[in-house]
Image 1 (cartoon, rainbow, N blue to C red):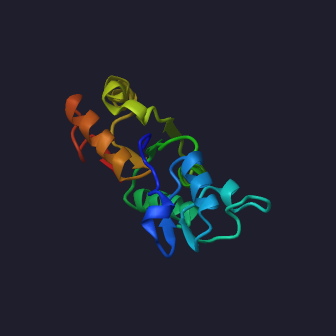
Image 2 (cartoon, rainbow, N blue to C red; image 1 turned 30 degrees about the vertical axis):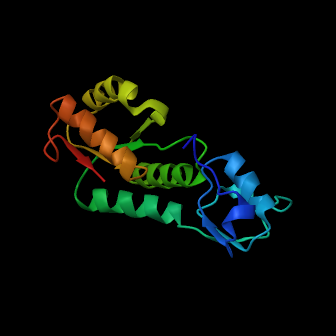
Length: 171
């Protein structure tokens, strides 16, 4: 993500942009591009009044509903131990999923462990992730913020000898 760049607009001649905004620098470049733009799952601050990006259309997932659906799915399967593995802390959709998931499992009388991310270096994070997974109670249902985080969980489980789905469920 550190090397993501928009094409040089004077050479590109594009008619519009459909984009996720992975960094503030990319967000500023898109705002300055003066092209019709659709933002995909933008952070809340980008849509706030006064933001130079607020003038653009956006398409967003209902991340709170995703969190509630994940909790409901696991609760219906009889799980009573839960955990959430977050994506990058600056991603509003990850925060929204975590809050809704935690609220739903706590409303059912269960606790929810939380793993903040250190995904800037997934390889270095693996030993910490293995230790976190081993510390979870047996038959814990883990809700990963996204597919990348789920892959991290599955790799760490394999490294730690944790069986999926016998010891740990991952969604």
